[in-house]
Amino acid sequence: MKTLKRHLTVANVLSITAIFIALSATAVAATKLGAGQVKAVNIARQAVTNAKIKTQAVTSGKIKNGGVVNADLGAGAVSNSKIVNGAVGASKLAKEAVTSGALAKKAVTEAKLGAESVGTGKLDNEAVTSAKVSSTVWKQLVKNVQYVTETSANNSEDEKNVTASCPTGKEAIAGGARVNAPASVKVALNGDYPAVASNNARTGWIASGRETPEEAGNWQIVAYVICAEL
Image 1 (cartoon, helix red, strand yellow):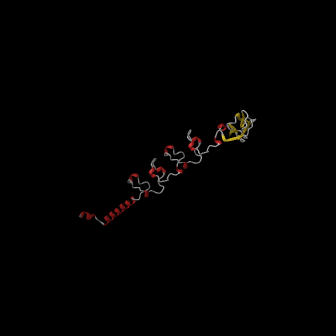
Image 2 (cartoon, one colour):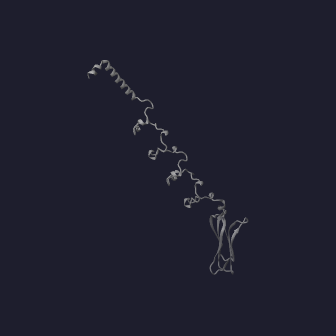
Image 3 (cartoon, rainbow, N blue to C red):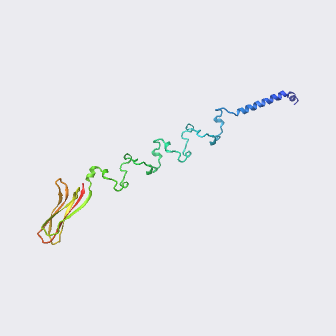
Protein backbone atom coordinates (compact mmCIF):
# COMPACT_ATOMS: atom_id res chain seq x y z
CA MET A 1 0.00 0.00 0.00
CA LYS A 2 2.90 2.33 0.84
CA THR A 3 4.44 1.49 -2.50
CA LEU A 4 1.15 2.36 -4.30
CA LYS A 5 0.92 5.65 -2.44
CA ARG A 6 4.46 6.53 -3.49
CA HIS A 7 3.41 6.14 -7.15
CA LEU A 8 0.09 8.04 -6.91
CA THR A 9 0.77 11.52 -8.12
CA VAL A 10 -1.51 14.15 -9.51
CA ALA A 11 -0.22 13.37 -12.98
CA ASN A 12 -0.96 9.66 -12.60
CA VAL A 13 -4.50 10.28 -11.43
CA LEU A 14 -5.19 12.64 -14.30
CA SER A 15 -3.76 10.12 -16.78
CA ILE A 16 -5.94 7.28 -15.47
CA THR A 17 -9.00 9.54 -15.54
CA ALA A 18 -8.30 10.44 -19.16
CA ILE A 19 -8.02 6.74 -20.07
CA PHE A 20 -11.45 5.98 -18.51
CA ILE A 21 -13.02 8.89 -20.34
CA ALA A 22 -11.54 7.70 -23.63
CA LEU A 23 -12.77 4.15 -23.06
CA SER A 24 -16.26 5.43 -22.25
CA ALA A 25 -16.32 7.44 -25.47
CA THR A 26 -15.29 4.34 -27.42
CA ALA A 27 -18.12 2.33 -25.84
CA VAL A 28 -20.66 5.01 -26.70
CA ALA A 29 -19.33 5.21 -30.24
CA ALA A 30 -19.69 1.43 -30.57
CA THR A 31 -23.49 1.71 -30.04
CA LYS A 32 -23.79 3.84 -33.17
CA LEU A 33 -23.88 1.15 -35.91
CA GLY A 34 -23.20 1.83 -39.54
CA ALA A 35 -25.25 0.61 -42.52
CA GLY A 36 -25.18 -3.17 -42.91
CA GLN A 37 -23.46 -3.77 -39.55
CA VAL A 38 -26.44 -5.68 -38.03
CA LYS A 39 -26.32 -9.25 -39.37
CA ALA A 40 -28.98 -11.97 -39.22
CA VAL A 41 -27.00 -13.74 -36.49
CA ASN A 42 -27.28 -10.63 -34.32
CA ILE A 43 -31.11 -10.71 -34.34
CA ALA A 44 -32.86 -12.95 -31.84
CA ARG A 45 -35.73 -15.19 -32.92
CA GLN A 46 -39.10 -13.41 -32.96
CA ALA A 47 -37.24 -10.12 -32.33
CA VAL A 48 -38.66 -8.29 -35.40
CA THR A 49 -42.34 -7.66 -34.64
CA ASN A 50 -45.06 -6.27 -36.93
CA ALA A 51 -44.60 -2.79 -35.45
CA LYS A 52 -40.93 -2.84 -36.50
CA ILE A 53 -41.71 -3.48 -40.18
CA LYS A 54 -42.23 -0.43 -42.37
CA THR A 55 -45.40 -0.19 -44.42
CA GLN A 56 -44.94 -1.95 -47.81
CA ALA A 57 -41.40 -2.93 -46.73
CA VAL A 58 -41.92 -6.65 -47.53
CA THR A 59 -41.89 -6.99 -51.32
CA SER A 60 -42.70 -9.99 -53.53
CA GLY A 61 -39.05 -10.96 -53.73
CA LYS A 62 -38.92 -11.35 -49.93
CA ILE A 63 -41.77 -13.90 -49.84
CA LYS A 64 -40.87 -17.55 -50.26
CA ASN A 65 -42.61 -19.38 -53.13
CA GLY A 66 -45.66 -21.07 -51.66
CA GLY A 67 -45.20 -19.06 -48.47
CA VAL A 68 -48.62 -17.36 -48.56
CA VAL A 69 -51.22 -19.96 -47.56
CA ASN A 70 -55.01 -19.74 -47.39
CA ALA A 71 -54.95 -18.72 -43.72
CA ASP A 72 -52.87 -15.65 -44.62
CA LEU A 73 -55.48 -14.28 -47.04
CA GLY A 74 -58.17 -11.95 -45.82
CA ALA A 75 -61.82 -12.30 -46.84
CA GLY A 76 -62.24 -10.92 -50.36
CA ALA A 77 -58.48 -10.30 -50.63
CA VAL A 78 -58.07 -12.00 -54.01
CA SER A 79 -59.97 -9.86 -56.52
CA ASN A 80 -60.71 -10.61 -60.17
CA SER A 81 -57.83 -8.43 -61.37
CA LYS A 82 -55.37 -10.52 -59.31
CA ILE A 83 -56.23 -13.77 -61.12
CA VAL A 84 -54.33 -14.59 -64.29
CA ASN A 85 -56.43 -15.52 -67.33
CA GLY A 86 -56.89 -19.28 -67.43
CA ALA A 87 -55.54 -19.68 -63.89
CA VAL A 88 -58.67 -21.24 -62.39
CA GLY A 89 -58.94 -24.77 -63.79
CA ALA A 90 -61.77 -27.27 -63.43
CA SER A 91 -59.97 -28.99 -60.54
CA LYS A 92 -60.16 -25.74 -58.53
CA LEU A 93 -63.95 -25.51 -58.74
CA ALA A 94 -66.18 -27.17 -56.18
CA LYS A 95 -69.07 -29.31 -57.39
CA GLU A 96 -72.05 -27.15 -58.38
CA ALA A 97 -69.97 -24.04 -57.62
CA VAL A 98 -70.86 -22.26 -60.88
CA THR A 99 -74.52 -21.23 -60.70
CA SER A 100 -76.68 -19.76 -63.45
CA GLY A 101 -76.14 -16.29 -62.01
CA ALA A 102 -72.40 -16.63 -62.63
CA LEU A 103 -72.83 -17.31 -66.36
CA ALA A 104 -72.88 -14.52 -68.90
CA LYS A 105 -75.74 -14.41 -71.39
CA LYS A 106 -75.04 -16.69 -74.35
CA ALA A 107 -71.93 -17.98 -72.55
CA VAL A 108 -72.86 -21.64 -73.04
CA THR A 109 -72.36 -22.26 -76.75
CA GLU A 110 -73.15 -25.34 -78.82
CA ALA A 111 -69.53 -26.49 -78.54
CA LYS A 112 -69.89 -26.60 -74.73
CA LEU A 113 -72.91 -28.94 -74.78
CA GLY A 114 -72.48 -32.69 -74.75
CA ALA A 115 -74.35 -34.92 -77.16
CA GLU A 116 -78.02 -35.27 -76.13
CA SER A 117 -77.35 -33.14 -73.02
CA VAL A 118 -80.50 -31.01 -73.41
CA GLY A 119 -83.56 -33.12 -72.62
CA THR A 120 -87.20 -32.22 -73.31
CA GLY A 121 -87.61 -31.25 -69.67
CA LYS A 122 -85.19 -28.34 -70.24
CA LEU A 123 -87.28 -26.84 -73.08
CA ASP A 124 -90.06 -24.35 -72.44
CA ASN A 125 -93.45 -25.07 -73.92
CA GLU A 126 -93.56 -23.86 -77.53
CA ALA A 127 -89.83 -23.00 -77.34
CA VAL A 128 -88.96 -24.81 -80.58
CA THR A 129 -90.22 -22.62 -83.42
CA SER A 130 -90.43 -23.42 -87.13
CA ALA A 131 -87.14 -21.58 -87.67
CA LYS A 132 -85.41 -24.21 -85.48
CA VAL A 133 -86.77 -27.17 -87.46
CA SER A 134 -84.99 -28.34 -90.60
CA SER A 135 -86.85 -27.63 -93.83
CA THR A 136 -86.98 -31.35 -94.67
CA VAL A 137 -88.65 -32.21 -91.37
CA TRP A 138 -90.90 -29.15 -91.53
CA LYS A 139 -92.33 -30.24 -94.88
CA GLN A 140 -93.27 -33.59 -93.40
CA LEU A 141 -95.15 -32.10 -90.47
CA VAL A 142 -98.92 -31.73 -90.34
CA LYS A 143 -99.69 -28.20 -89.17
CA ASN A 144 -102.83 -26.30 -88.21
CA VAL A 145 -105.18 -29.24 -88.57
CA GLN A 146 -108.85 -28.38 -89.18
CA TYR A 147 -111.96 -30.61 -89.43
CA VAL A 148 -114.62 -29.60 -92.01
CA THR A 149 -118.03 -31.19 -92.73
CA GLU A 150 -120.68 -30.55 -95.34
CA THR A 151 -124.21 -32.01 -95.35
CA SER A 152 -126.64 -32.29 -98.25
CA ALA A 153 -130.31 -31.34 -98.15
CA ASN A 154 -132.61 -33.73 -96.31
CA ASN A 155 -135.12 -34.82 -98.97
CA SER A 156 -136.08 -37.80 -101.11
CA GLU A 157 -134.00 -37.15 -104.20
CA ASP A 158 -132.77 -40.33 -105.85
CA GLU A 159 -129.10 -39.26 -105.94
CA LYS A 160 -127.08 -36.71 -104.00
CA ASN A 161 -123.47 -35.55 -103.68
CA VAL A 162 -121.75 -33.00 -101.49
CA THR A 163 -118.21 -31.65 -101.13
CA ALA A 164 -116.48 -30.60 -97.91
CA SER A 165 -113.86 -28.03 -98.98
CA CYS A 166 -110.65 -27.14 -97.14
CA PRO A 167 -109.90 -23.49 -96.28
CA THR A 168 -107.44 -21.64 -98.52
CA GLY A 169 -103.87 -22.64 -97.83
CA LYS A 170 -104.74 -26.10 -96.53
CA GLU A 171 -105.06 -29.49 -98.19
CA ALA A 172 -107.07 -32.60 -97.41
CA ILE A 173 -105.09 -35.29 -95.59
CA ALA A 174 -108.06 -37.58 -94.89
CA GLY A 175 -111.84 -37.68 -95.25
CA GLY A 176 -114.97 -39.80 -95.45
CA ALA A 177 -118.73 -40.00 -96.07
CA ARG A 178 -121.81 -40.95 -94.12
CA VAL A 179 -125.53 -41.44 -94.89
CA ASN A 180 -128.22 -40.14 -92.59
CA ALA A 181 -131.46 -42.00 -93.30
CA PRO A 182 -134.14 -43.96 -91.45
CA ALA A 183 -133.93 -47.73 -91.60
CA SER A 184 -136.78 -47.89 -94.07
CA VAL A 185 -134.87 -45.86 -96.68
CA LYS A 186 -132.26 -47.89 -98.54
CA VAL A 187 -129.30 -45.71 -99.65
CA ALA A 188 -125.88 -46.79 -100.85
CA LEU A 189 -122.68 -44.75 -100.98
CA ASN A 190 -121.28 -44.56 -104.47
CA GLY A 191 -118.65 -41.86 -103.96
CA ASP A 192 -116.08 -41.27 -101.19
CA TYR A 193 -112.86 -39.62 -102.44
CA PRO A 194 -110.75 -36.43 -102.26
CA ALA A 195 -111.50 -33.44 -104.45
CA VAL A 196 -108.42 -32.68 -106.57
CA ALA A 197 -107.65 -29.35 -108.27
CA SER A 198 -105.90 -28.92 -111.63
CA ASN A 199 -102.56 -28.50 -109.81
CA ASN A 200 -103.17 -31.84 -108.05
CA ALA A 201 -103.80 -30.16 -104.71
CA ARG A 202 -106.37 -32.03 -102.62
CA THR A 203 -108.87 -29.27 -101.96
CA GLY A 204 -111.52 -31.22 -100.05
CA TRP A 205 -113.58 -34.43 -99.91
CA ILE A 206 -116.51 -35.59 -102.08
CA ALA A 207 -119.32 -37.87 -100.88
CA SER A 208 -122.20 -39.17 -103.02
CA GLY A 209 -125.01 -41.70 -102.65
CA ARG A 210 -128.24 -42.97 -104.24
CA GLU A 211 -131.39 -44.76 -103.23
CA THR A 212 -131.62 -48.51 -103.92
CA PRO A 213 -134.37 -48.79 -105.11
CA GLU A 214 -136.09 -45.46 -105.25
CA GLU A 215 -137.71 -44.63 -101.94
CA ALA A 216 -140.17 -41.94 -100.91
CA GLY A 217 -138.38 -41.20 -97.61
CA ASN A 218 -136.00 -38.35 -96.92
CA TRP A 219 -132.28 -38.87 -96.48
CA GLN A 220 -128.95 -36.98 -96.32
CA ILE A 221 -125.38 -37.57 -97.23
CA VAL A 222 -122.50 -36.05 -95.24
CA ALA A 223 -118.90 -35.42 -96.40
CA TYR A 224 -116.17 -34.71 -93.89
CA VAL A 225 -112.52 -33.84 -94.44
CA ILE A 226 -109.43 -33.28 -92.31
CA CYS A 227 -107.40 -30.35 -93.63
CA ALA A 228 -103.92 -29.12 -92.71
CA GLU A 229 -101.06 -26.91 -93.88
CA LEU A 230 -98.46 -28.94 -95.70
